[in-house]
Length: 127
Length: 171
Image: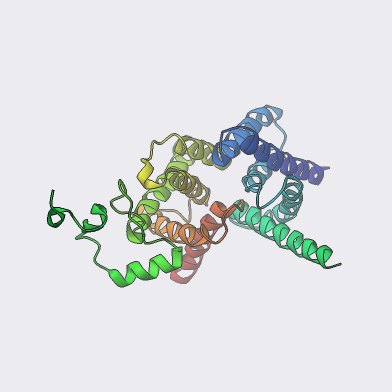
């Protein structure tokens, strides 16, 4: 159940940031920060033990949503968020909090998604 | 006005920077950061790599120190501190000659580095060193991965890894 919630928070974070950044004139940074602060404001009163993890997952996935639409489409961003949540589970085993680990995971998932989709596109074009 | 009295070329080109005379370093930086060698009107320093490095360093420091301050003094969580500093950074009126979007982005990147354990960012010299590393990694990553999300976090992660490595070596 916890894993599902974390995956859901990741997908929501990427989706909300991507939509905010591209449908409004906020820009990627404001979209990411405002979406994250709103999520924190909404989830903190719940008081669950899982809430800080959910907030971190949402915040990290919002970096995926900061991608340019020319690089990653909406579907690709959601896929990258899914990959990010897999990295996020791995991060929980780190003994010390490393700044930028969420961002680096988001970056890796974006690069992975872009590379795989570009390869698939090339393969389908050849076939 | 006669042709002799006209300054040759762009007047901004004739600006000299007595503090920055390291042509070799400038050439290496320009190649690494893929910077054009232009200096437009109103941009006296243009894309001078050493100047860019300096201003990015300061912006990174601002983000990093601000995030640490919110965490240590006001006991905010890392996520809230970073988001607040990132949001505040977008309201700093950087002049157009200083690439405001890039500066806002690096303030946000600095705030990610500020999410590091306070054990790693223990003193001001360490934060300054981290800012230099962060600015370098950001300037290196920016032209190569344009449009990809997570670039800022990746440059902050490089800083964390460098600090962790240094602490492990010096211990």
